[in-house]
Image (tube, rainbow, N blue to C red; front, side):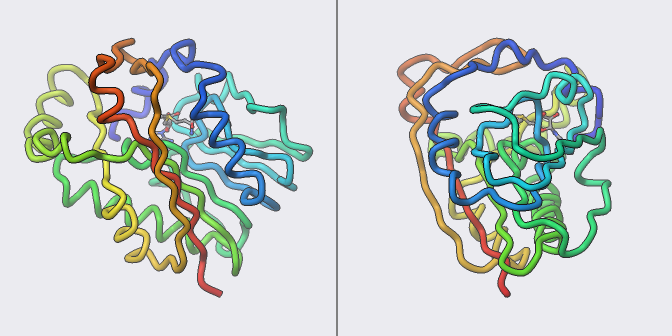
Length: 232
Ligand SMILES: C[S@@+](CC[C@H](N)C(=O)[O-])C[C@H]1O[C@@H](n2cnc3c(N)ncnc32)[C@H](O)[C@@H]1O
């Protein structure tokens, strides 16, 4: 992510308001998100259950997203604050949050090689871990990379450079469940609870409006939900 205005161009209209996978995130996170909550790359829609939040801070590079912020199931019963900043640059106070969320953010931290993209994700996860209180939790949701996507990731470095230079598009780098768990361990997280959930709905890309053809939806669209514990 090198152009901070890139995400301002996303059309939030293209996000469905009530897709099954969003309701699934809400249901599954009821007991997880609590206390002081930090959301990295909160975007304009918060789908997890915020009913037990005592403070909520959302960070995003896009002011357009922050201006359109909405909470699925109603706003949290506490103070809501937002800040336009890159979570890669921001300094986070140590041991200050009970829950940190990174919902469909990590694949947007791609750089011009898989190695550099991975290093970025690990550095962000380690920063999130330091900002958690003991026994705090990191909630991660990601579009899991599937076996069929390997040609894309094999060609990621040249593709990234070409799209970046000629189309001003920041290509996402997706991660498999195994890679996500390995990066979380490297960043110092302990126990992980993991769910993999197929997303059997038509979801259009917010920049292009293009959705996968039905035959590929079942094969490629899958959400990984991770709850990571900060070791005491
Ligand atoms: C796919 S959207 C997800 C938004 C929201 N978390 C959700 O679940 O709907 C990714 C979001 O990450 C934001 N983003 C991308 N790179 C970022 C960065 N380096 N720092 C902060 N936000 C970033 C984008 O502006 C966008 O709002």
